[in-house]
Length: 203
Image 1 (cartoon, rainbow, N blue to C red):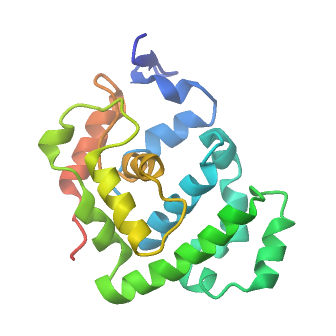
Image 2: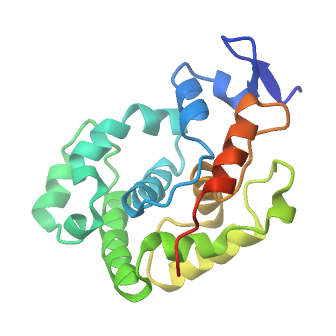
Image 3: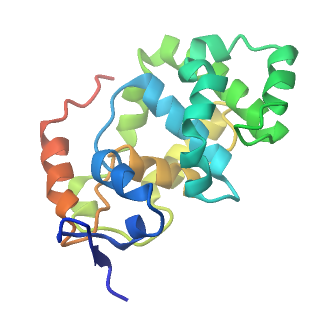
């Protein structure tokens, strides 16, 4: 099967972005572009955890609801959530009402807060696991990598939950730690330019 499809502008793109109408904008403006903002990185880790067993289309459609329900993924605030917040979230039809995933997001917020105290930022810690450029010179079709296995193991050791290697690999692809836009995709070169100019977080 061809790895690309022709977009509405006549240019080639990764085949997956044609699976749903809302994927095109996400593919063109977000997926793969490097992110150094702690809140956005935390949000994506949470949303990838909520996606476990579901489709990304389901999560993307509910993303604004998640942001409203979780105070825009301010992990300092989420870390202070109490039982009443869990009860509130379990009643919120706009998000995925899975007790284990909700409790994991709150737990992970507390772990993120501690990690920032120790490392200076969440970004500094996560970007240490960026693969060497040569190892990802070409787009990958795998669902895990040595780096996602290592990052998953490190996060779990720190007490994070719902951060398996497949979840972490999807996070790394989306947040620009790798450029997995396929060869020929019009966005691949844009992401590569963004990665070259991106200032890696200190740490």
